[in-house]
Amino acid sequence: MNTGLNLHGVRAIYRFEMNRALRTWLQSILAPVLSTSLYFIVFGSAIGSRMGDIDGVSYGAYIIPGLLMLSLLSESISNAAFGIYMPKWSGTIYELLSAPVSWVEVLMGYVGAAATKSLLLGSLILLTARLFVPYEIAHPVWMVGFLVLTAITFCLFGFIIGLWADNFQKLQVIPLLIITPLTFLGGAFYSINMLPPFWQTVSLFNPVVYLISGLRWAFYGAADVHIAVSTSMTLAFMLTCLAVVWWVFKTGYRIRK
Picture 1 (cartoon, rainbow, N blue to C red):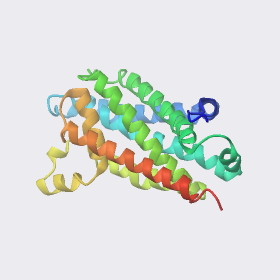
Picture 2 (picture 1 turned 120 degrees about the vertical axis):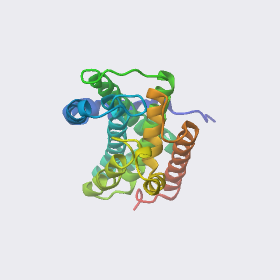
Picture 3 (picture 1 turned 30 degrees about the vertical axis):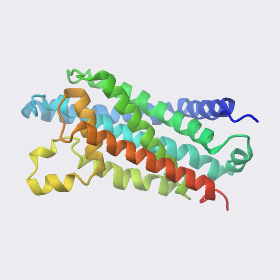
Picture 4 (picture 1 turned 90 degrees about the vertical axis):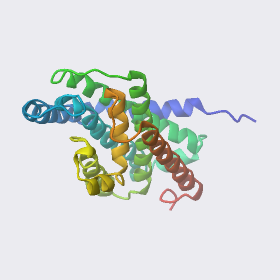
């Protein structure tokens, strides 16, 4: 009995999702890069030139990890959610469930493609940032690892949203009404150490603080939260998402009617 992974099935799902992204590259790649460029122009160049340094880093460079995380979280969730929702909406999810692929292989195909698209977008944003702000990366290997971990984690979260949603409106509720505000309040444009003590404590209940802080440490060696805590929180959330996906496929919740 063959107990190995069905790599052909994983590859088929992965290639299908990547081809879909290439067909909609204006929406999935170019639009987020242009939006982030506007942030760099307004906050990095216009406002940043009038701001002092934060932790020894110019304001324009300081906000790069926050803007990168804003795009990475939004695109990771949207890519993965839309990818698995479309088979549900069109009814082809039943063909997928009857195919000789396990839930692990389905997850690897969809989440792998969504994470690839998000990391590609993140790379383009880093290159775009060079046009507006000079910056150096103190821990490049850690930066890549943390970006990969974050992309995979929130693609898993997006996958869960896609399984849960029963209409297109629900696909946008969590990214727009929860993730984006949490990112803006999570230190994307400032250090939480600049806040009064009470609000610093409140900010620690925002999970996005740990993501931005971890990435900012990889860039500049300075962070609001210890890097070990940021990594542990991200890993814990990833394992929680994996457990939820396993439960969904085991019970058929929102998949089988």
